[in-house]
Amino acid sequence: MEKLKILVVDDESRMRKLVKDFLVKKDFSVSEAADGEEALELFFSDKGISLIIMDVMMPKMDGYEAVRTIRQYSQVPIIMLTARAEERDELLGFELGVDEYISKPFSPKILVARVEAILRRSLAVKTDSIEVGGILLDKAAHQVSVDGKQVELSFKEFELLSYFVENQGLALSRENILNHVWNYDYFGDARTIDTHVKKLRSKLGKQGEYIKTIWGMGYKFEVEK
Image 1 (cartoon, helix red, strand yellow):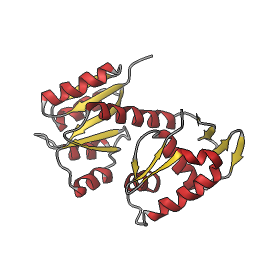
Image 2: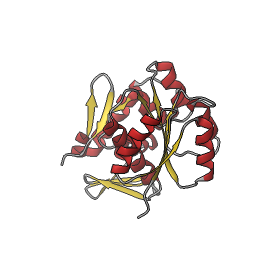
Image 3: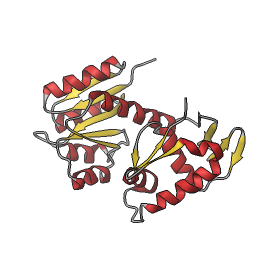
Image 4: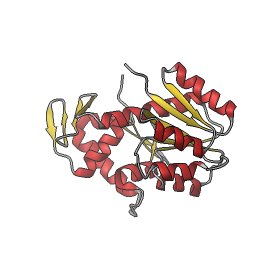
């Protein structure tokens, strides 16, 4: 099987090497770029890139501008790396279509785990069905069955369950859930998520216990081993 290719974009060569070494250990292929302009050249010349890890502050063209350009042509998964930790910076990233936002300094192992989770999700979208812990999602038919019995879910309940399943083991903030399930321009209350989660748990029966509450933050979908 051909290795999945990751594009790592950062003006610090030591940072690129650190991230690359951890990704290579996990059997990914890695391309590197030192600024936004070089990243765009590489991305548009190589159709095999599966995910981009993009720094924000770089010479010539910053990460935001590079992401803005890429999003005009592609929905490739993008993780933003930044030394900034202000909320407005994260919001700008999500508005531009960034999938994940990680502040420096960070654990390379956590970064790789995020990469793997996002790729699982993006690759799962291309398949017709996902099965986990007795739950079968038929994405083409937009149907769900639990232990072989069909369960009636609303459109948003189905989208929410899909997002949970495709991000197994990751802590998902209410903001992230709103961004991905309701889209970032949704102006509703985050309590909408709690209401949908409550209904979803009820409809899933004992499998509803896979949806764990993370107090003060959001939720995590975790299947007991």
